[in-house]
Image 1 (tube, rainbow, N blue to C red):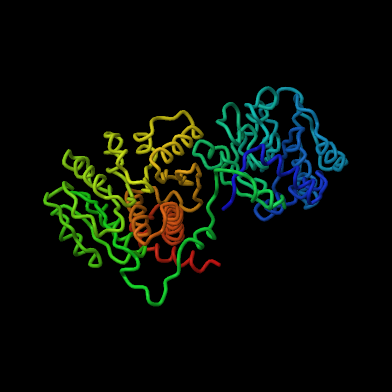
Image 2: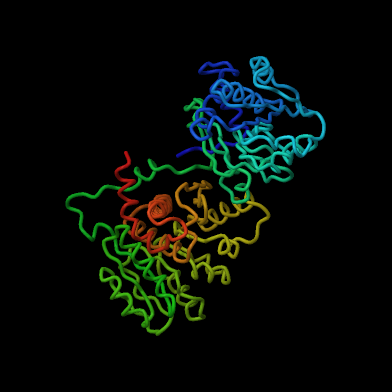
Length: 501
């Protein structure tokens, strides 16, 4: 896991590295500058005119070091220093002295001309770092506005100026196309409202003290492929279908049998020993024809879910895709929650029923997995004013239900009952299509049936689901990717993770 630290911890990490490596603070800054430049020169042609806009703190010191190094690489570089109320840091002063007149430096001391940066092809933002605790104002805000008004590519050093790492942001913020962050991603990077400012972000290793990072307390983590490799258990020679559990999926309705098929196909590809699928009568022929590997459980109603089968033999249940919200379906869901004591996977219409009937939430078995998209989550947890508040609501819901809550989207967040949140890095906009969530429900149900814990199931299932989308998009593109493709590429997703290390 990549630990996501707050700004106070990052400051302490820098200080610990300086003291215990040991390394001088200016040399650590030099290391950070070099890492940024190594990233930069692989992507930006040396004929491009580069502008670097610096503050007078340590982020500005980074900008000056980067300017010197890019000048040495042969880039045409010009530096602007925004001289507001922030005093010059010691390392800023040192890097300013090291430039010695090359490249050219200009001070911004009054309100900036809107055309100040218009001759630059690339603007590097080094005004404020992650230590900023309030909105940018005055001359700083004016400089940010001037940068945003240009047609230049904008690249932020560590974090876009004006964006707060640990709290909601307001005011003027650099709208970066790329953000190159040092060592550890910032919590704000994982939220949708930050994306117009961070653009595509990445981290570069600057050699901060690994032991300090490992020992730092945090409740926020970024999942890696290695984490999933550790979770997925290899199969033994004498394993058999009884070893891997019997999953039940309750899904589908008249006109929505596709949801049942997508969830069931994904479950089958995720490795349970047996799969049964409970569908309305109208879905029987469809299911048996499309998925001969699945056993059919048939509802008494022609068009929708009205009663659960006997549940004793099932290891887990995935319920919700396409079932609708008929009064009889509400009663049938309540029946499942009352009679099934093992963890379930709850999605789609099942979540919407819970949102309208919150008294049913008390019946959800502990360690179940709920997989809402943002609107479904709002029905369960209420509205929020900003992404940080939404995250706290997600943590609270997971804690109250003693369940895992997966909030779907870019960087899907996985909240566990003990207050931890894991952000998932896989997936792409091509997956923003109907049916993608049904596939995830199937994957989670298939994994949970095999005896993985709810946390392991959520981490692995969400990661593999996104990875299948990433593999599929490389072949089919993001515009043409559909949910069926996720099922098609799921085996390759498993193979990629199992053969990764």
